Amino acid sequence: MRLVHTADLHLGYRAYHRTNAYGINIREADVARVFRELLEKTAKIAPDLLLIAGDIFHTVRPSNAAIADAFRQFSRFREKAPDTAVVIIAGNHDSPRAAETGNILRLFAEIPGFQVAHQEPKRLRFPALDTAVLCLPHNSLFAERQPAIEPDPDAGINILMAHGAHEDLKLISHFGAALLRSSDIKPAEWSYVALGHYHLYESLAPNMIYPGAIERTSMDVWSEAGRPKGFVELETEDGKMTFHELEGTRPVIDLKPIAGRDLPPRELNSLIESALEGVSGGIDEKIIRLRVFDVPRDVYRELDHRKIREYRNQALHFNLDARPPQVTRLSGSGAPGRRLTLREELTEFLKHRWKPDSRQVDREALIELGRRYLQEAEEAEALEDRE
Image (cartoon, rainbow, N blue to C red; front, top):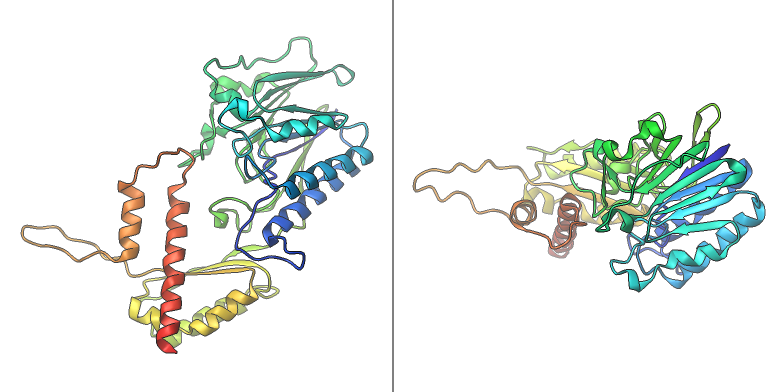
């Protein structure tokens, strides 16, 4: 049997407040385009089974446009690959906290050949394939009564599909997803374990795979820079596995940081310009970050902020992440110490003192976002002063 495994589509994802000629957020259009590429390539493979391991949408309540486009694209896939059975489970992004709220993924069960597990664990059987698929959507892993994770003894091929964060990933935060343990899954007992939630391709065992997201949609998008996006194809008879790269993703580039200590503004401007000119194919319409360390506030204010704004207009998103010198605070009797900068106060509060109400909060991503907002405010202030 041949199967295709994908996950973390995040349809409806938006970022950067930039729209195309049709008024659609550019990043939302990027995700929709790559989703079409995924289905087109899968239709050409014509697998017996297509597994989609959660987070079909980026939010619990996606826009009508995102829902309509997903239904349309899945229906077209059904026409192109009429013999492929499709199994979808819900992830944390598309699972309401209250079961009575309902789940939009149920809509796709109306398409012939599509089966959806959105709340309860569900075992699906495909007699013609001698295959059983145990589906563990996000909410089922948080239920008071945990499902029995066991293969079907009457099936020749047993597949486990779950959406959660595996313990081997050693993630600092797993964004509200359930923690999966090999001791519970027992991967050796399954023909294949299809996981979703982690956005990078990762093989945790020869038969236990995260295919990664189809586009770079993490809160910390820089962690995905330079890593390919795609999906997994598996031949169960011989265990041959192929990772198919998706070519339509937008480039995300995290440039080599610049050490800015003791550099005057003119030299720092030159280094920033050289770094961006060194981007292969130019910076047009790309997502780029350049970190510059040890830049005092007075030097930062004297940078060429007009040029920086030109870079921002040229790229889809350019983050010049200028960080002030790190000062080691010495404590001692009668020593009041230096007053923290606003950026340092923000970092100190979010990292050590703030206790979020939700487990889905990524502290590091939030710190990164706060720093960016402060930096943009400083740039605007610097530009006004120079004018």
